[in-house]
Image 1 (tube, rainbow, N blue to C red):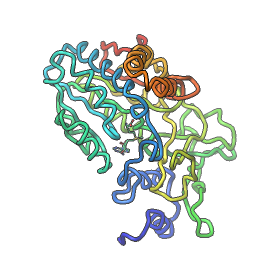
Image 2 (cartoon, helix red, strand yellow):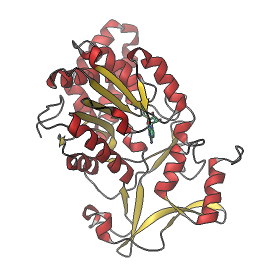
Image 3 (cartoon, helix red, strand yellow):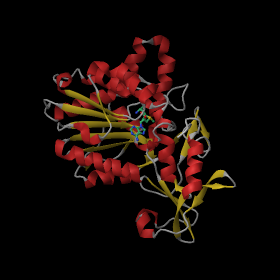
Image 4 (tube, rainbow, N blue to C red):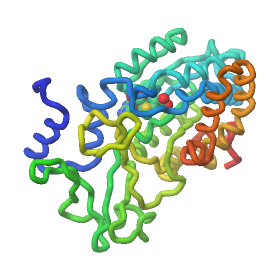
Length: 360
Ligand SMILES: C[S@@+](CC[C@H](N)C(=O)[O-])C[C@H]1O[C@@H](n2cnc3c(N)ncnc32)[C@H](O)[C@@H]1O
């Protein structure tokens, strides 16, 4: 395979050979193609990248999550060995901030077995630099988490997994595909319809023209993860943008340099994501035997963990940065910024009471 061919060229060749591909296949290639996928090549984060995430906005985000982890570790009776797994750790910032706090809990540092699940070699190098002191291990398969109790963190991980889309036409559902029309990449629909029962009863009242998005990869990943966590004991904390209930709607988006772009232009060069269906994700964890705590919005979650107090202390210690710190605080918590769109899901072993969640 020639290195001069772009991912777009390779996708177009495949479509010419085999016909249109499903949106999920297209999205998977764009994000994780082994040499040309978006999450295989560069650091996409930060003001110079394509988007910014909560841990990169303020250290307080990771710090309060560190306190959340420490509290859970104590509730779990301070196991001798505790695996802390982060899915898609980005630059390692969330863990660096969280571990600065969590390791203050007596016994935590000695118990810590840090595991990182990451595809991007550029980010792995940054994670090694930031987290090297904690002796992390990178795993390519979540089966490799070992046998100890485990706490899993996932911030903006599930939105990066491929989705399927179905469009309702004449009361039937057709899967959205990517094909070529007059040589140009374009969306199309599967020639044969899917039965309504296969799409899910949550979409039964959808009108013609509406779209059902199904995050099958995210649901399968969550199910697999939860089946690993259940016998070991522990919890999964997933923070992401998305909706609390399964509902029709189209949320696929492509971002490049902080601006929306056409998802079919420049495959592998823009971030492709979709909103997370938290109802479906929770169901996958529940089916594996975990307790799913009532979903909370990010603003409320961070506030209940003491973000405002931590922010005030940081601003008092750094008066010259108070304006920037205030802006960051608002960005994380305000309802018209990340506070309400982002939700927090926790699935844990029965009996654990993770901080920030009402009783199930
Ligand atoms: C949106 S970034 C979030 C990074 C980090 N959690 C943060 O909040 O800054 C998505 C992360 O998931 C990783 N990632 C995306 N798809 C992945 C996959 N299929 N397997 C493993 N890691 C993946 C990316 O390389 C990146 O680290």
